Length: 330
Ligand code: BYC
Image (cartoon, rainbow, N blue to C red; front, side, top):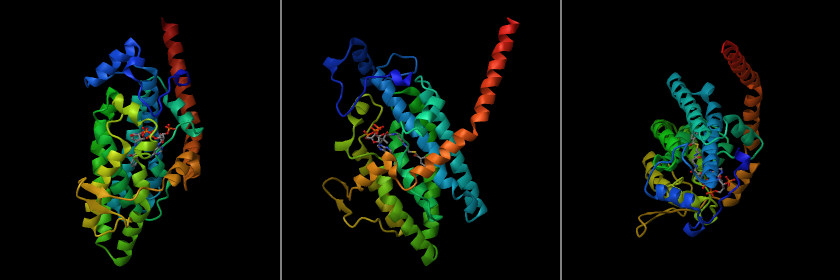
């Protein structure tokens, strides 16, 4: 079904005069702030954009378990281990809500997984960076979940009902994740010189990759204009990146850590910080599959998919047997 959805969107917005009567009526519903539900009529491009974004989001939650899962067995205390374990399990739950939301649009989870594994679907760039020390668990929670919340709180008001509702629960859990990350950073920043140095090093390595999470700058964003017209996205990439920097810099100051950006300065006129852009060449390399951990992440997902084949086959065989029994009883 997904392969047959042809009307692509890119850069520009579909103009009202170009719309069919159904498309115009649909846009009126969006403009009036109505929620679109799975059985409602929707333009093929709207469906396609949602499948791309929700699917990518779901994959990000699942792949996002890997960098943190790496540290569960090496957490410094039993309490930290229990918290990290709960956080990683939450991410699995987020992935499941999101796959379910995407499935209401007519694509199966199996199809989405196959598209991830053969490179037709993406997952967030951030998870292609390694987690080298325990302080990275702090930086991931504080910065990565912090960036995720900045992006996802507005998505609670997105136009597609199942996506908006999934976001409400996800955002509650992400807030706890962000707090636990900040708590790790605080403990380390107030610890020994070596611990403070580890916290600073984690901030140095995760700062720019976190800024990249919001997507390319607005001038290079392909989908923003149409996605915002459809209220699939509520803000531009640059708007959210600016809000993230404005929120996070005072937190870094509170921790006594230094944001690795010499050009960072408060701009009174705009009421926000001026800051250095991430290296966009690096970003495009990472999302093209050439980041530090892309191969490892995909290998882990491929292995999980292959190892789970017998479970999927068993469930399908069971369902088929049940249907045959029901048919025989009729
Ligand atoms: N990484 O036109 P643009 C989490 C792609 S998980 C990879 O601006 P759009 C968490 C983009 O797909 C966080 N690719 O795109 C989990 C497009 O390529 P395609 C995940 C990216 O969609 C576990 C091209 O670049 N959150 O929080 O309008 C532990 C042009 O970009 C990225 C979500 O997914 C990227 N960072 O805007 C802890 C939120 N950025 O598809 C935490 C929902 C851009 O045409 N998603 N690309 O081949 C969104 O809000 C939007 O999809 C984005 C991008 C803002 C990410």
